[in-house]
Length: 341
Picture (spheres, rainbow, N blue to C red):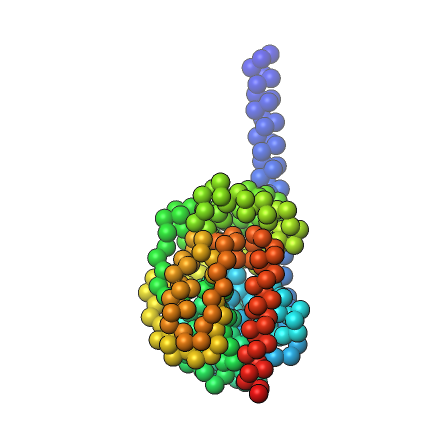
């Protein structure tokens, strides 16, 4: 009797497990189709003189050319939404290797800058303020250096401005290992996406390890600030949506990592345009000395130093974010007004 009951329980457990696994696979497949459709629903694709570029453009008036950071793409435009609210037009192209912009021979920061200049030609845009975020910093710097006549101003946000070595946490953390593995990109980012939406506070603990130099105890204070602010929670979830699906971004991510370790940039002192730098002194991804390097070498540079959630300078004290965003808006306004005077 006991043996028969044990067998029945074992069989029922197998059926339940098999049913859950089937449901999960079906859910994942539906999710992947939905995310693949969503990611390019509002984008545009153009054939430029240097190759195909996928891009997002929204807002009105003067144009801000946004070189997005790693892992996102054209749908990372929301990081500059305050500039849309201020009346500017945000142009966010997929950098080479991301989504609809092929990597081909456009991988170096200089080549990326040339490709985006070609995009501006195709769109009939002459002058821009350039914003470089994180791994978008090097091509933003190259654009300002190579196209001074088109660059009205420059903003660097948590931006890489020189070679940066990967840390042990970035290489060996859960997030770090997943980023490096091609065949697991879509399922890995499915799990990250679900965790960021449904286990937000827990996921941010991993961000403390990879994106900040805080101890876990110090980082917990910033996690509490994020979780107490509905607007910041929405932005964390917007970031979750902006990094999936993972596979169509993999070539770009790996190219960024290659450039991070090997790139050689044009001399920063050739950049004459007014430059505003915003960086956290607790950035665990792109160290703070990238900011001071830019400050020391770009003649017309100003640095705003914040603490915040390390590399994710938008998260933390909402008043700090509002303050530096106001200064970014004022800087952009000054750059366009100065050029038109």
